[in-house]
Image 1: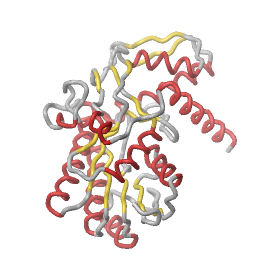
Image 2: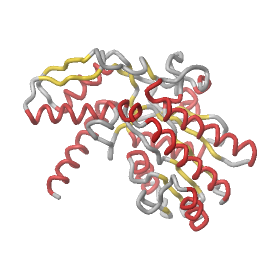
Image 3: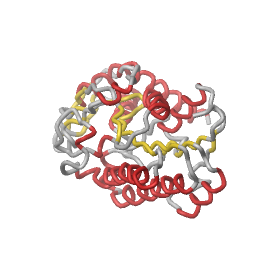
Image 4: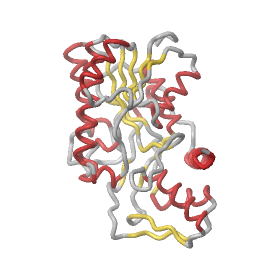
Length: 314
């Protein structure tokens, strides 16, 4: 990518898109094109056609998606399937029509079968049944990977796919029902501390293991791969290390400085038992994460506190 290349980040206000934007700006890139969701509905074929015909971006980071935690995924099953298919179909097809030089499609680790061997290798895609609670989202993301490869095969498009592990960081979503596990726990421990509650109850047994990557590390990896990776298939982006939900809760409790107890509601679902990424392909490309989990949780919590303070002031 030339510093003057026109770059479109779909989803630039989200956690991932904003991290990619910060990284590119820091590297000296200066020719960005943005549209908010109010200005451009990515689900609308004509609006996306018109946008690409007008702007003709050289490089596209497809970080826009309808996302959420286990409750949101399971509740809004039709929305998650329809919205995500529409968004990626419109952007990928129009990137082809308007001769975009390179596109990066960002997916999710939920594309892998529920009971796939651990750690999750890229080759495990489509080798078993998906986790039922987030199957619609996963199917949309799998379609995006296959679409990028199909456009590469048929038209020679340099479209690549990356699959991040669980993400957290600046500009995260802390919605009480629709957020992912790490930001949800930050909010719950913070509110329990503020309200002087004696305990915090967490869904499930606490035994499932998850891997977490700070969003700014993801942005570093995306920038690196956009410059250095030009192959079909997909690349896992993660740390290659995981932690149980119970251990995660204890770590967040420590960072937030909550003094109460933790209880687990074992009547609630655990989700997939383990989702650890095999990142040997990424490491062989020459990239490794830098921000360790406790440090990242502290950075995320500081950002959460700042956002809360800003909202109170406004």
